[in-house]
Structure formats: structure tokens, C-alpha cells
Amino acid sequence: MLNWLNLAVGALAGVLLMFGPVYFYGKSVGKADLVTQLQEDRAEIVKDGKQVDENVYSADDAMLCSLLGGCLSDAPQPD
Image 1 (cartoon, rainbow, N blue to C red):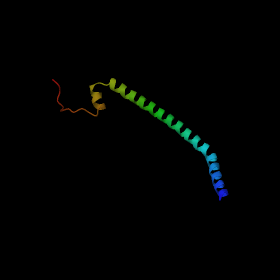
Image 2: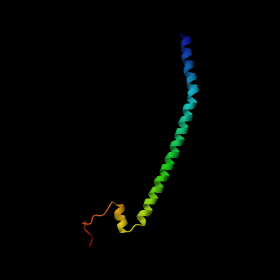
Image 3: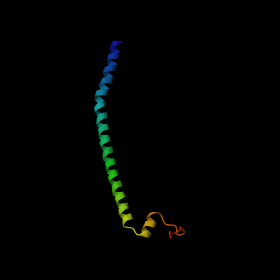
Image 4: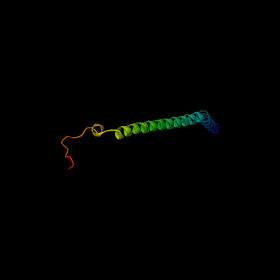
């Protein structure tokens, strides 16, 4: 009975020793890839946001209306 238990524990330890490092290596590589991807996405968002800001700052009244989705012609005008 004790021999079968030792064999099972030894087999489990062997499996962990074989696949444990591969698991942790894959996990660390996955985290590094995710961090890189998030940094690139953030840079693109900042770049896109900057481009939109430049368009808004350089726009005249008609362009602002088109950027906002159009202006209502029957809207009350301030006096």
C-alpha cells in the first residue's frame, strides 16, 4: 500500500517538475506580451486623441458643427 502511494506522489512530483517551468515561462511571456500590447494601444489612443484635438483647435465654426455631428439650423440664437 505504501509503495503505491509513494509511486503516485513521485509521479505527481515528476509531472510538476517537468511542466512547472514551462507553465511559468509561458505565463511570464504572456504577461510581457500583454504589457507591450497595452502600451502600444495606449500610445495609439494618445496619438489619435492628439490628432482629434489638433482638428478641433484648428476648426472654424462650420467645421466644429460637422465634427459635432451637425448643428441645428432652427436652434435659438443668443441675442
